[in-house]
Length: 114
Length: 114
Image (tube, rainbow over all chains, first blue to last red; front, side):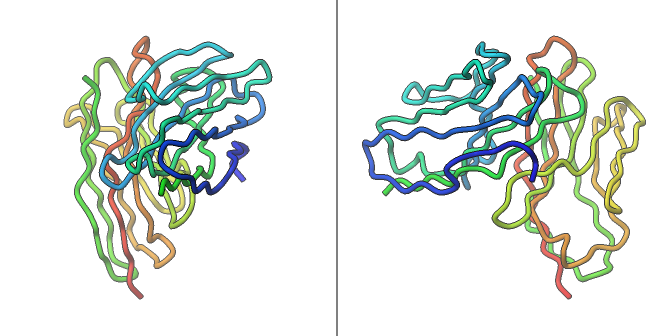
């Protein structure tokens, strides 16, 4: 157990729907990162939060949004889902942004859009 | 910009063979370098890291040396086991004041046969 908790582990939904993925960072970590892993795109950085504030954005679609709450958990909202959104979504955390010791990853949420 | 390039897989080896997975990077400043491993059906685990030139990261028999002159961080293991079968990702966090997000290579799949 890495200490980063992601729920749900699996999600199957239809095109056009909206889902919410949840991440609880490791205890003491203030920074949260979301990544998307797909076969054709590899691991893509989506967005980063630090202590509730958005810190950096990567290749995140406008249909996607995220936030980090006061208790430091984070949610990634995916709307108007398309077949191409099917992927593994990982959350990672670190004590501070850019932590040189690396980030701790959760086990991921596998999203399947049908 | 910042990027990581890994040798393409899949790499197939026999048990006890020597492993090298090549990784080169482009980065501004002085990045920290990492190898992550993803076992089938699991999340990403930090395998080893190096934060400055000539540092050697090591863990579980794997080693990688931060070579600034060749901008490389090749992963090596002297004798692989079937249990090492996984996907290996080279990654970097850029130098100071560069945003701090972890940037991954495309991953190299390793398959070790008995």
